[in-house]
Length: 129
Ligand SMILES: [Zn+2]
Image (cartoon, rainbow, N blue to C red):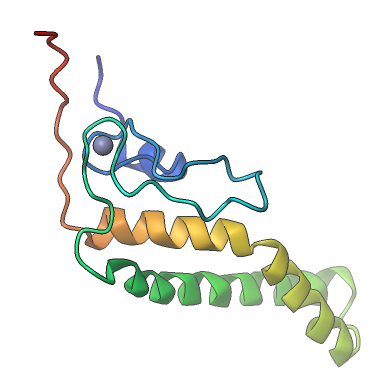
């Protein structure tokens, strides 16, 4: 079986160690439960919060994501609506950010764990004893 790519495991919110186990209990589309995360990987039993308060650092990733969204949405509003009134920006940008909160919440945690968690990929032992 080929090694699952790191990019694919990040996009699918998989465990960084086995790249198979789901990090979150419910799919992203479940709007009320999008934040519920497994404490341990269901496949390899890696503890996702590798140290106490680890995911507080994910706020920095979320901050950078929201800055990117601000810039992209501002540019889109500017181009599509031909530089409209200031209030277009004041309403449009927060609406888009509010809509993307579940995505930012999840992917900030996934990216932070994959990039700064210090967890290396390990091939899982499939032998049945
Ligand atoms: Zn795992």
